[in-house]
Structures are given as structure tokens and as C-alpha cells.
Amino acid sequence: MLIPVRKSTVILLALCSLVNCGPAAAELLREGVALSAEKHTLAHTEGRIVLDDVHGSALATGSHSVIRYQLPVADSVPGIIDCAEGGSIWFVMGGGGFAGLPQKSLSYVGCMDGEGAITVFELPTPQALPNGICVAADGRVYVTEYGGNKIAVIDPKTRLVSEFVIPSAASNPTALDLDSHNRIWFNLNKAHKLACLNQNGKIAEYAIPTPQSRPTGLVVDDRDNVWFAEMYGNKIGMLSPQGDIVEYALSEPQSKPTAMCFDKHSGVWFCQRGSSKLGNIRDGQLREIPLPGNYSGPFFITRGPDNAIWFTELYNGKIGRLDLATESLSEIDLKCGDDWPGALAFDERGNLWITLMKGNSIIKIDAKPLSS
Image (cartoon, rainbow, N blue to C red; front, top):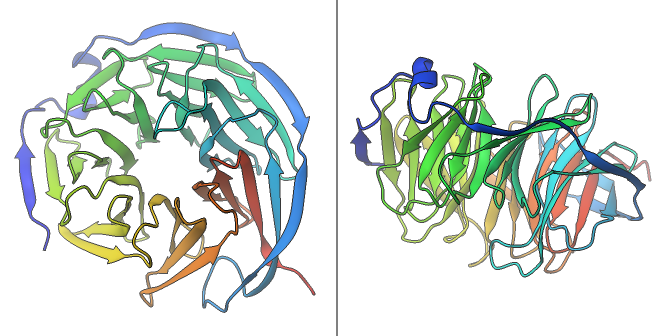
């Protein structure tokens, strides 16, 4: 059973008055700066993968085309990925500087079309180390700069970028998501806070009750509750629209919760990289599902078009699928060695895209099985 560890009333202001709480405004460092961009046709290798009969899966039974695209920037460590309307695929290319990765920190964001052409955008801040990425309904792309301590907003139509400086210094922002008012919520990992950037350029910050919590994952539900994963606090937290924080303790120490998503019933799901489990909170109750193997390292998670929960396994080169209707768990071996499957996303055609962080490449699994 899940026990609420603490209910905080430290945050008393309603979210509708964010303009008047916290710092008065973020410093708008750059507004409408033209992005440096280079377009490439990617070198790629083609193969096929055979998927077992999984009833209701987003990927039909049979042999599927698999294309691995090699990225044009060396050691770019492609990470979080998101798909936009129209078929473009956006992802961060921030290099190393986190998770013990030795590569140099970079400032790139990539955008691929469905045919294997990529445009690489360079953010104005050197060694910005873009970490989280989110594509809004209007096509704007929001990026957290883990190394630059900023939020970048990219307009793909004009190829202009604006950057907002986060008030807390060296906060290392990570995951981000939009609420129903088009405000951007994001984690401040080393400041142990949540923050919100509204449409007027104001940033408000919220302290998390647990000291040294290191928030990493974050999602906003359809009621504008902000859910966040405390990687070092070993808890899942929720900030309500009324300004209260509730925290839920995980069952195993050092579970290291990371990425998060929702199922179709608004239950929140999250990866537990340290304990190799998936976690779920619904109606205040915690459920944990151990994964095969002792050290799979679930890292990123999303709901597929089949309403199943899909996730990456960082340390064993696989992706997994949890069928919520049958409670069955299946895995797909990407046969990528130690290339670290980082994040995954389905495009509007149902194709599955996966970043390989150490492999410096992107995998596409075609939704439709091959005819022979």
C-alpha cells in the first residue's frame, strides 16, 4: 500500500497567480535569435526485426523494417525524443556531462523527417547540454538546458530561438511538460525545486519538501496536477493546482525513479532505474512491477497508441511493453550491445523511434510488417 509521506502547505499561492509569486520574471537572455542550422542526409543501415504475436500491440506481429540512422555530430549522445504533427521527430543532442558520460557537453537539437533527413540546430549558449524536450500543439519546441541553466523556446517556422535564464543558479533543469494553460513546468534537479514558465516570461519556483530530492522526471495530468520523480529522495511527488505537495515513498531504497507517463485512466507510471522496476500510482496506491533481469535499468517510458506502456531498458539493449489489459510483459531485443536505448516515441503513423545514447544514432521500427 502507498502511504502519503508528507503533505506540504509551504506553497500557498494558487497557480493562477504565478505572475506574482517567486521571482518577478525570468531574465530573457535572447529573444528571436536565428538558429544556426545544418541539414544532412543521414547514413543508415537497414535490417528487420521479428515481433511475436502480442494481441493489441501497436506493432503488428511479423517481420518489421528497422532502420538505424547514424547522427552527423560525433558523440552527440541523443537523449529525450518527441514527435510533432506532420511527422517530424525532435530530440536533444547534448553530448556528455551527466550520468558519468565522458563526452564533451554540446548545444545541439536535432529534427528528422520521416525519410532520414536531419536538420541540426545549435543553441546560442555554449555547452548548453539540452536535456528535456517537449513539442507543443502549436509546433513550438521547448528545451531544458541542463548545462546552460536556461529554457529555450524554438519556433520551427521562423527558426528563431528565445532563451530564459532560470533564477536559481546551476539548477540543472531536466524534464518538462505543458499544462492546460500552456505554461511550461520543469524540474530543477540540483536546486531540488519545481519551476514554471508562463506565457508572459515569468518563472516561479517551488521548493520540494524532501531535502536533496534531485527531481528528474515530470509530467502534468489533465487536471493540471504536476507529478515529479525524486531520484535521490526516492519518492514520487505531486503538486496540485491549489499549491499543495504530496509525496509518496517507494518501497525499495535507491530506486532512482526517472521518466514518467500516464495511462488512459490518468494513472501515473514511472521507471525505477535503480531497482529495475516499473511503478504506478493510481488513487493513492502504489504498484510496482519487477522487470526480468537484475539490472535492466528502465530509463524512459511512454504510452503507446495501443494504450500499453512502452519503456527502454538502458543497460541491456532492449525495449519493453506492458499490456495493461492482460498484465503481460514482453521485451524486444534491439541487438545494439551497450549502446544505451535512451528514449522512445511513436509518431503519428505508429512508427516507433528510439534514441541510442552511446551509439550516437536513432532507430526507427516501421509500424507495418514487411510483406515477406
